[in-house]
Image (cartoon, rainbow, N blue to C red; front, side, top):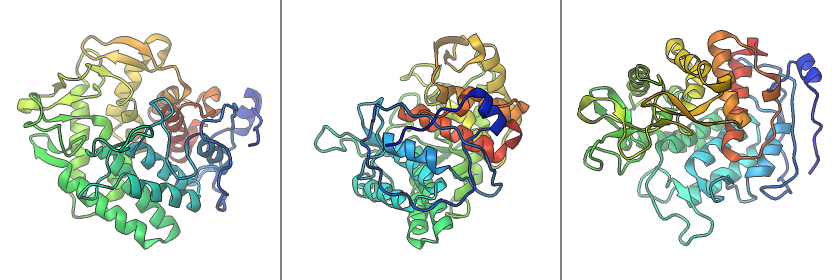
Length: 378
């Protein structure tokens, strides 16, 4: 594996660095490095923006692939016992499509279909553990993972003209809509999983997780599965975000109770804005139509926190409990400020050094979104 040069800050500024390239890339060979390589690698790239579709540079994709994707096509969550989950497989598929890497996309989808799509419907089991038999011990789905996978398949079908991908995207999207959404006074809401989160399952149910509203996926899937009322699903997420913006922290908790037509932190989870909810502003900024007022709330709150950095926040009193210092989380803040206020992306966040699966994914996505939707920020 080749160690890539770390560019100086001055060079980055001169280049207008970002993570985007519109040059069409060929299919890359299989990565010959083991997952979790200790070699420290960083890459920073000059942007050439494409207004019509996301394009991820092959250099950064090769780093991500070597660090987190096995030869079989499994995306490894290296901070969580090296498990794999439908969310990670969905992110991996999306990034492979954006990198125009058909071979890796096929491997990741093949593993996902074989190991996770083992239910009696078209939804994926949410988690796969490498050191347990059977590897899947809980067959419940995670609806955000299914949305990401359906979106990635539809994206790949559009780019590479593969009808089978679109057919699978349609089946998955249909079952998300039919089995993992329901109507209440808010509108059509997304359940985190088909089982375990409804009024019959939890005393303060239904319980939802607003980071499962993957707004760009919802927008994309309108044309893939028009049988589902995606407009109502999207609007319910925006309504819930507005409802949570009036508390002491003005931030949504990771888990939210909708019992008795009220909106409150779910009782069986910590009342905090944390690792799940950090994705919400990213998805808002990525969506086809962003609600700038709702997105701006995150900026206003972050500006009042220590060092203006993202934090785990106790939503009951607005107090910061833990700093989210990884560049991946900071990149989400930079994206939010870029989208709402036109603030330039900090140079130091344009260097991508994939170390931890989740924040590395968020950093890459934040740069992709900023480069394609908000080019003024570079």
